[in-house]
Length: 266
Image (cartoon, rainbow, N blue to C red; front, side):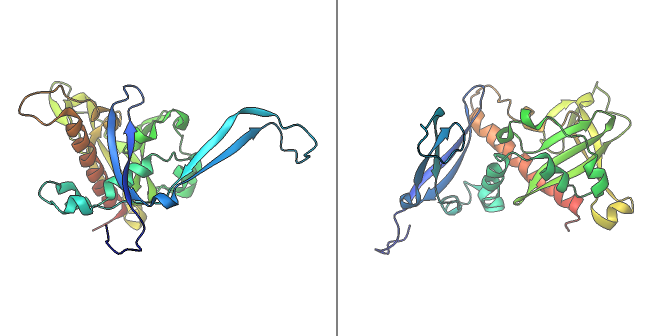
């Protein structure tokens, strides 16, 4: 915080994401803001839109209350101690921005427009999942299977400030259930039958020429759920909530790398 006498007063705050079932804190997004930018508005829920002032105002519910604020997010405090905050040193504020992005629900039109490795015509025919059932702040990506073609699947992730959707195809054969396997995205060990090899066509000319990116992923595309299963507390071990947080950051980092490979990033 600057000491210049005319600088605005800055306060520190945070956005807390809670598990809707257990109310456990899943993530805290630290930020700072100028209290002078905080505003509160109330909008009446009136019946009808008549502008006739001679008519009695009839309300259908309590007013809609909205708070607005101009906030800043930075990693200055974490970068002061880089050894204690390796994630901030490597990723900066990307995890916080990604967390804010996934709090915003996507529409069907936005998902269709974000496909990078299928034609516009194919994107228009992609079957959509039940978006009204998606708890967005508990997902690092949205993944779903095509009920008409079980080996076909789709992933929607955030790349910077924009959504990116991809077509995936699973291999014909699965890993044997008698051996253990690990998802390359969430790094959670599981029975072999619960992990599958998926291939994603690269975007652009490379994909049209048959170039693909392959990796092992949870067969049900449920990485976001499995990483949030906290281990029981144990001595000489990190607190369960910190373990879950590190899993989330790791999944986000590996998703970004996989998406970059599909997009053809060097």
